[in-house]
Image (cartoon, rainbow, N blue to C red; front, side):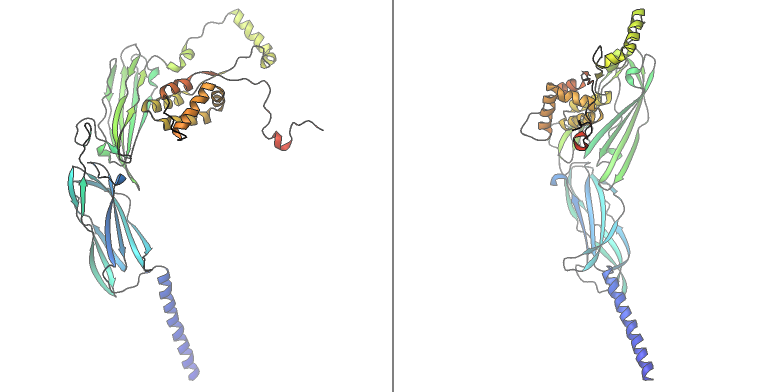
Length: 437
């Protein structure tokens, strides 16, 4: 009997210890035990993130960061958002729940939500409290509580510059973190002849905006072309850092005259909400008809070959070996690609030295033979050094004339011809090609 009682006591103790270990394991895994709610156990804060800690202008994006810290078990939850009168808004992604450690070492549940709001008018507004309805376990009892954030005074600044601003009818007010333009044609406009039609598609993207805030389709009209405007497609892409607005504009342009037509660029001013300055982006100017100006020599009809030319070609083929060692060899002509030249022209038109240097770097990486010719040219090498001093901040160098640099680096160059093959780069390491001793 004593033995039976002893075994029963051991089993009971083991069972109790198992329950204690289970509770300890639950605590280690971050489980919040049921306990009586005390002041400060449930908090909800709403914090607006302002660019440069400056008051926003109308239609400028502001991120509201919601953060709840709850030191209790939560069974159900529901966030009630205020009406947000005088604001447009969109939620960025889903709510986030995680465990967090408080300063006193206690573990708590953390709730996070991000809402992008856009004030519609100038003035001072109040963001009413957000309400988080929680069904909690209050010391073993199921209870419904409401956790409220504090109301927020939200001033929207008035535009004080002489031109532009949210209330000006022209130009269109475009507050964004960044604006990019993509321009595509089918076919290339310089190949369009009289009576032909080309389709132009321009895509405008603005970070930190909703699609409804993008400008209407620009007017594209000039002498000698008939324009048929296509539909405008707008979409808002939600990202964790904020919405990205995208508008796609489309035109069909029919060339009605034989002359070359110059289609002027269209400037789109926008307000940089990060640097708090006005900037300008541009739908680039293009030429319609007339052939490609950078390939005029290629487009000329070839002249008929004479007997003398044929004989010379045969002689050249027969003497190819002599030509390779310098007798009559002609150095090939190198030139920056058309896309590279366009990138330089766009950066020069915008006065953006950083973008100009980046485009030049990509060109040098893609065309190493041309890069070697530039480095060997004293004018090009000096211009590149001056540009590097400006971009990378090596001294107080003035920004060089980007238009002149575009002409310099767009020029045709003759490649240097080396008759003998270069020594292998690994020759100094593995002894290849060294004379025997």
